[in-house]
Length: 252
Length: 154
Image (cartoon, rainbow over all chains, first blue to last red; front, side, top):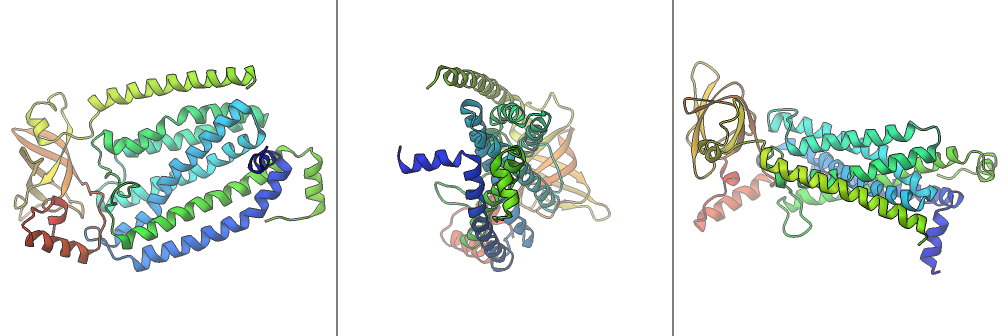
């Protein structure tokens, strides 16, 4: 067994993960906050106003990272859910279930900022076009997963049921992403492309990318914190939790 | 891999495959029937006949905007490049509404004129500073390149 595989297996053990998460969480927070401050300064102060939309386009620096994260978090959750259903390690269940509220929050932010942006530019807060509707469906799927998880008395049973729902709900991800391609929508198409040129000026692109990376680190930090609390709750009868609580050794 | 896990994987794969298949069939079906909007060509070809009220999408034709002096009534035409259609609307237009801007109007057809109850402006996926846009417009003029619609706006 090589070193990486050994480390991976160690991470699956709750006490080890608890300490590891406590160790990396402050670092993730620091990187997230620094990148977000830089990104916000670049986006709200340094970036020039858009030729058509003026200063109103600046909501892009919150809206687009949140919308991307709503899909990214779901992806991570669906993969952990798959692992949780097949191999049943506790940690995969915890990571999948603790990702759901974070993803739901990002989805809600994307929906709200999008609607605030839509009113001045499009002329309406809400319209039932394919992108907006599929993103709303994504929000409801998140809520369904959270609800199903908490509907069981046994968290392991609840996590398995909710993981199944998370995997099935993943069919919505390509629909959200390609909705602006497959259908005529009010929502515009893709601006930032991985391949080929992006249709956004470089002075506006770099703050957007910084905000995106900051959001990823925030997700990491938040997931670590939530998972530690969930582990203490799930393993409350175990010796290591008693040691951790009595020892007063505070991590992060 | 233990048989139990293999059974779980096969079960999960079968269920996910069925769900994915059902969803793609649905998406494919909807892509034929579900349209947020019709273009003037589609309307003139009779595609929107089945709907009393529908959405019409296209570019506002340059020079076609006529504001009424005493009311909020505004007349303009939208085009998809092939066909043009007159639109009538009473109300406040969104900020982005201007010539050569893509708009989506909701309403119904009355004697060949689309009477809109709501006009939304669609914006494209480009973001650029004003200076860059002017520079690009000048370069296009210099080299006699036809202006893409979104860049031709004032």
